[in-house]
Image (tube, rainbow, N blue to C red; front, side, top):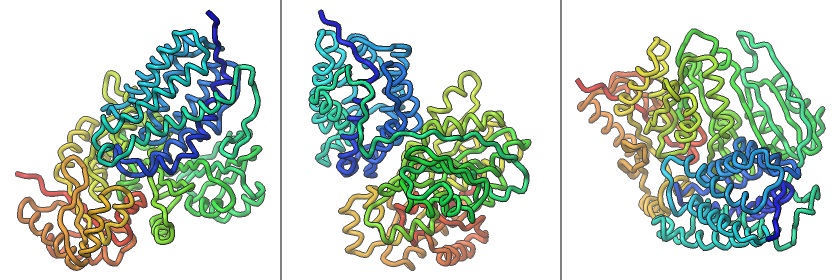
Length: 602
């Protein structure tokens, strides 16, 4: 029997071919995205995950060398559920085939089958009829075909055909797909990736193809960059945000970039590669840096670190409090209680931002008025989450994490996965499902941070958070449902009915954190009246301990509403602040929300 060998060259070119084909179908994959939530960004997330890998890959004959690089890059760039699953599968391959220069078909088939287990184990509640199912069917066929002694091109063709069949059956396995008449978006993305590899196979690529370049716009070569810098951390930091950007194909020279951004900060470094620059600056206005540079190239990566918060890690507190940027909390309160924040990613067409940092609420609503497309959001890179937890554990005895409701985002799952290594033996990191967002999430976070500053231990804080979240509520008045329809939060039919009748809803969350329409009115005045009645009922039933007001570009309306609540409760708002852009993309400009904590029942 002839022995067929797979090398790193084939993996390198196969991956690029798959990625290029996937990128051509990004919009369609977005359009059919209805599971796990219909937020229309699966195509964006998958392409960006694969782009990170394609940007950093290095060709080599060694299977292990190529896979190790791909695996590391996939962890760095994984976005969305599908990106995380693919990343875990690739890392499984890299682990299974470690130190292999080249492999035969049997070894390849065995590795693929083992790696599917890695992908399934990464998901808390695996759902069939998704990418996991198609990946599993594909791997099973690859494993079976690898035993037949046939060429790799034929093995991959059989796997591709099996994946196509499995994709067509996903609506039979997942009711929401059947209801919408679509296949699973993540699974389709994977099949498009396999299709690209199949197209390469048809062209007859063999192991004799070594370092031949694939010259396409989406495939980038990385230039060398110096990133060795240290700065003294001193009290009274002038520019608090250490900001770094990776920009592709800039049309400015390094000196021109320095000149363009110098008014916004100091400690500027511009490292030049062949096709990309890495830009470093200390600034108080990261969004201004992004705004200045966006017209001059494609910004691939953004990293913003809060040096004030880093400095605060050296204080006497033993427990760190960590949340995400969806928790609407003013900066002065974050500073006062040393609350650490993970800023989520906001994606708009080809632009990507860090929520609150590289796009402000004001700029977001300005763009929302003129852009026809709808933005999306994605989770931070896994390596970024890992880095935050490691940094905090270097300075604290434990961490309590309070992200947005598990039902609304994958943030809880991602942080929980990253926390597992720290919780072997004694638990050092609690990741709480807040079942809340926005104003209510912020209230919960601040109360826990206050308790942490008073010396409560990790177990006490976790118990307090679980109890307190049940007494924490949010009511949101929304001027329009247009953006909730665009974002898939409600159906187009519901939106049409509301628009026809001029209905203005009051939106809240149920006990699991899922959104629900709580009440409605036919005018803004009617909305405020309805919410006032809700506040009165709450006061009569349990009483209100404290409240906050948040708004989407309507500080005047927020102050008026705060005054109404004060008359009813006799309490002043703990704070009034703006809603994060990621929350605002669904609520739209003009939304006002109250977050409150009910008194504990006697």
